[in-house]
Image 1: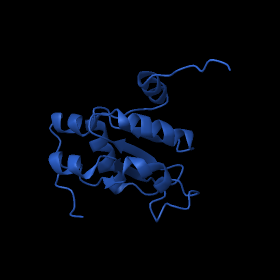
Image 2: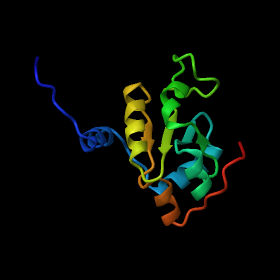
Image 3: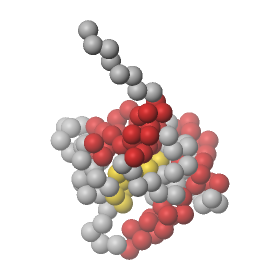
Length: 141
């Protein structure tokens, strides 16, 4: 049996990030303001963190929650499981996690699925807060 080449999580992260145009917190804030006034362009900021993390630190206002375990299923219009949350392949999708690691991996997978403008927030919500940008409590379940 041929020996399998092992990839570490660091390899996977570097591979995912090599195709991303990651956004920094101030840039995302600007994109969100511009998207409020833009026609035709769709910006989706998707928080993949579990509820406990969102309750502990708050959320970026205007973001939507889709859990990491179902993200690909919910965004892919061909999955049969999108339940009204499917994204267009041309949508600008910014994935957000706590520090910007899980979101990089998730955004890389979305790009492999054809979402060419998928990326993530560099530094995650922690970076957003460190940049002095506001968070709000998550909506009640």
